[in-house]
Image (tube, rainbow, N blue to C red; front, side, top):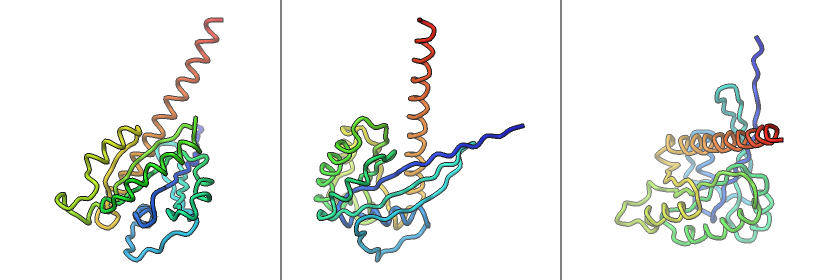
Length: 196
């Protein structure tokens, strides 16, 4: 009996203003560690994680980009070809939430016509209570719905399960989207064959 295994490289890019916790999210996901003294990313960094689902081996290539304005042109180069885009803001920073518009415009420009999954993440959910919340969850959820994005609040410090759940959800959505796209392609091809 032959057993076929497929490999699928998935490019994930994490975007957002400087200091929102992008590196901490990746470090929690890849290494299950939290470093409160994480250094600011200059340019970009790259991490890989392998996940097996069924007979498919997924290699997640995760790009951590800088949020510093002077590197925005370089960051735009990394957006091209992304399968999953994660936009991150910090729930204790209104400017980081407002900055999502810039990052959203960048992905629309660089991924126009592409088949990708978009997620908007509120990070540092452990820092403040609802009374002190600077960016309300309702406002962020509404923004995500307008952008057709998956929304989650996460804490790299206190909720490693939430980070894992985030990446699993995004991978599952990408798989589902691509299966439906392939089904549609083959159905149309079959339909054309039958109607000619």
